[in-house]
Every structure is written in C-alpha cells, then in structure tokens.
Image 1 (cartoon, one colour):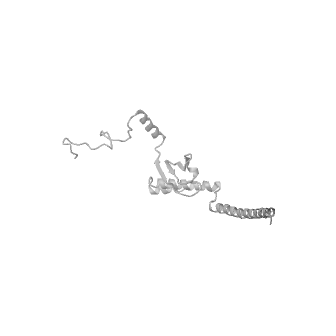
Image 2 (cartoon, rainbow, N blue to C red):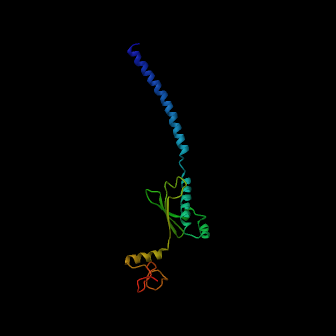
Image 3 (cartoon, rainbow, N blue to C red):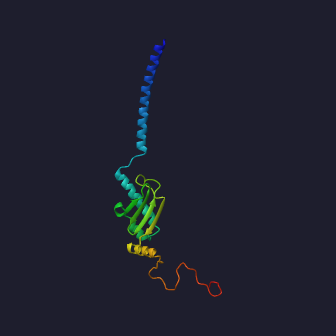
Length: 172
C-alpha cells in the first residue's frame, strides 16, 4: 500500500467512526434530557402558586401555634389562602414578610418555596397592635420619652426595677 491509499483509508475510517460516535452521543444526550425532565420537573405556574400558598400557610400556622390559644388557633388558621394573606418577598432571597389577620410573620426558607413543599428554617411572629398604637409609640420614641402604658400603677417605679431596700441595706 502506498501513502496515498493509506491516507484515504484513514480518512474513511475517521469519517465512519465520527458518524457512529455522533449517533451514540445523540442517544446519550437525549436520555440525559429525558432523565433530567423526569427527575427535576418544572412546575407549572398553577403548581408554583399552590406550593407557595401551602408553604406560607404552614409557616404562619407553625409561627402562630405559640401565640394563640388552641381553639382560636384552629378556627382562624384552617382556611388560610393566598387571597387572605398580604406578603412581600425580600429580593434575592427566600425570605417573606407575611401579614395575616392581626399577625405579622417573617419566614425564611432554605430553598424556593414555589418549587417544593417545606417548612421555613426561621420564622418570627408578632401581634400587630394596630396603627394607632404604633404611631403613638413612634411619637414617644422621637420625643425621647419613656413609653407609658395605660393602666400602670402610680407606685413610682417600673416593673423592671429592683425591689426597694430598707435602711439596713438588706431586702425584706
């Protein structure tokens, strides 16, 4: 065999091998795409909304179970839907500020709560005292005054002060 025939044979062999390899890679690539689609489904917008509703409702229930009496808790939290919630997502995070009835809750999720059902990794709940009380407290802070609550005693002292000591210096 001369060099010319050897070169042609090598070229034919490379082309045949290349075509065969591409067919194998196409099947392997298609298999990987189907497997990824099956194992990591992309939820529809409707499913994402349902997941978010479920996760926010669970977060609120989890946070409020400590705040409410049992009978009131089951009555108020049984029908939580997105329509009954006001919420904001902190941009770039999976943290949500959620308002439900007179409660306001901060909850932080480990992953996107629209994709998977999960409980938050952190939640904090507060009872909102109302706009009037919040404005009064803010005004008192700005004026630098101590906040005085209605119905306190006039005994002169606050609930966090130590008991008065007698003349000998020992407590009764």
